[in-house]
Image (cartoon, rainbow, N blue to C red; front, side, top):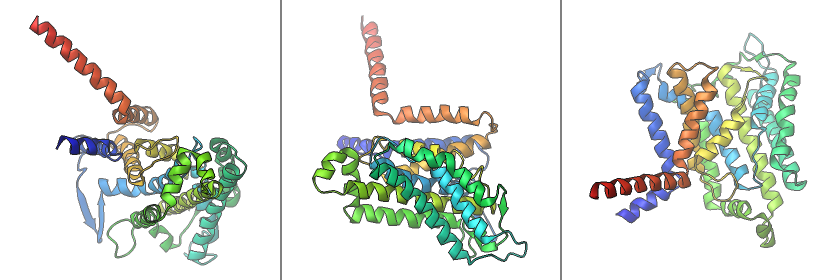
Length: 350
């Protein structure tokens, strides 16, 4: 029995789930009607539904970020927020802002073009990292800086509002579907990724490259190709996230769409217990990490923390959760606690 408990606590999913559970308990105690779910017009509404819906763009970015971090290089793609802004700008510019609700091009054509542009952005990052050997943070810094400028050029510096009704379904409710459609999108993407990682050798290749890129190359793994595909896929995930973000506000906001979300995505991967140095990873743990990050943000707003103070409080909460999840910290803390207990027992005995 004890051995089974030890195996459970050693699981990468254990501490992220505990952290998420603590967040839920905190919300139940301090946030009014946190567990309340209502049905309006056949759709589910409530704080939990809102957290999950708002977390979907972050979850998509986290899926791509997990792949990029797992292939190693001690870096991450810090351009995903800007790529999301570009994707949203492309789709909104193509659909147009006609009050009649008409579009300049077919809806699905606009979506496909926006996603292709996002994949191209990811492929550019992959080319710089995998082919030219530029450090990931430096390589992706280019699009991080220039990406929003590109989005501004696409929108002519304006906030483009889209009145085409089906566009709002991506980040809202599809008729006849009680849950937000964005949740379905995340579920489809996550299922496809997990299937590829588990049913093919791709997952093992990614872990092998993350652990030791040079040795992986010597045994015949195409390291350059897999790294390139990881960054291209990360761009695709950021592009889908950008579509959902734009759909939620029914507009393209090049300045604010996906702003600082790259940091949240990296944080979600770390809070999921994944090593930022690459190697072994858990996609499920990263998803729990994304929910934790979004729960922190939503909870702090719900308890009345102002937007100015939010980053500081959020940082303190994140540090606390990370310390709880850190095995070395727990070992040292428990060791000190036990040593104090022994000293006190010795004093009582004397």
